[in-house]
Image: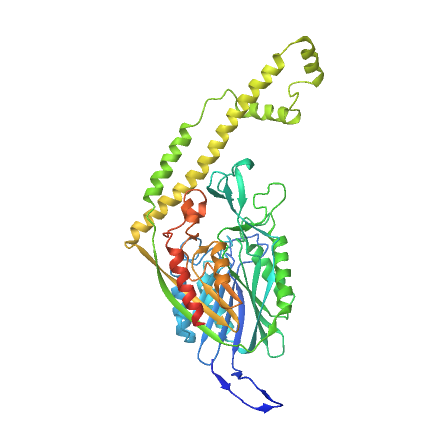
Length: 502
């Protein structure tokens, strides 16, 4: 972006005019969207889309692609070479530098089309073909009703997370829950007539609420949110959701078994909250377009000691199972009776009063014996639940230890982008960042409108904080990680340096 500095020192009524920053009015943008839902899926309540926003100044072109997929490579249906192939094809057809093309996965768990590469190339080319003069505006919104931190601190000092992969500990073991980030970061791209051409909104939450009948093939709550935004702005507006630091953030009441799961409710709430922020966006003099893309080497973890430790713990849990006289049917029967009438579970209270008057104790003794048997059975259930958590995490630890050994080097290279779009600033990372990472970057940034995008330009699994990684084996995201705890300090130092350059 070219911009001139006109320093006019005019003495008018004894006052001095300050320098005026003039920006070339040549910022252009184009946006488009395309359906990438798998064609074999017959029930699709809301489709999976690839959306593209192309921004062009005098000497810089940036492409932002948001995709309703679980990741860009590594897991899910998008192949590992997808990003390189799309970038190469766009460089050939449009001349855009490959590292100026950003891919963000919403992390919804739907199944995309096997032709997603061709479709994504097509939507970028369509967006580029619609370039027109635009103005950038930034804003923010607040939404704290639809998400929860899935990590919980236990009274023994460890942490656990809320997942369908395993059950949760008893209520009495829970000490506290973790934070959320309720901020929605908003970039509004307006045409010269004031209509919205595109909206980019950044928010942190796993879009895994699901719908009752879609069998998992849905763009989920963030897809609904984008639809709400597009339906309530100028015709043709493209709303691009950029996933934030949602590694430890679930939809609210994720384990609910009393109500049908439906992402549309949360999506509507997120979309309407975002619309409030969009309508508050105001123009500003900053229309710079800056793109930085650097490679960062991060240390891989050595998980062998933790695997051995967790295997020994699993053995102790197995050895802790004790004999019990009850089976499941008897346990449920007795539990119902004792919960319904704890003071007189086996008969009407009149029988207990009658026995007490005569000095008979048989019912009380039987109830006490049954209660002890119930407690023994319950302890075995808790041990079984603990085993499901340990086994799930051990499988992940062993998988990632093998990946790190097979890599043949002790580091992994990742892309980190830093973007300035007017006064909207964003940094990116390919992993599933947990929310404390994002909150910390925002707090330390010299720019008031700073946002963080995870799940961007590749995928390297979960990336918890160094402190959270002390808990490896307790919460699944701590085990589903290939990085050494030192990664956080290295990444955050790089982010600090990049933000200074913006």
